[in-house]
Image (cartoon, rainbow, N blue to C red; front, top):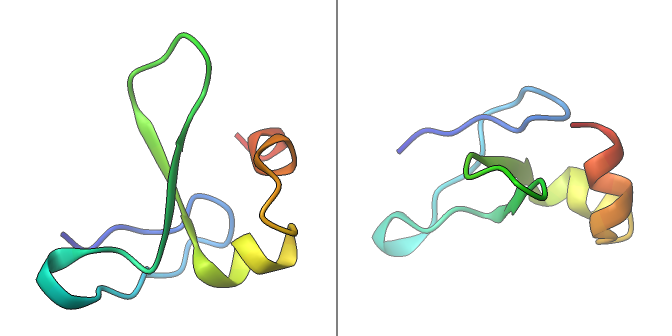
Length: 55
């Protein structure tokens, strides 16, 4: 799958069975998912509104 973090542009680690170590968020009204790595997720306190500011 090899996705990149939308915030820091680093490659997101892949876990068992192709699961990503991070999250995928969507902007309201869009179908495209934006991937965020686990490190950026921790840095932004797992707050979806903070992550959406970077989109």
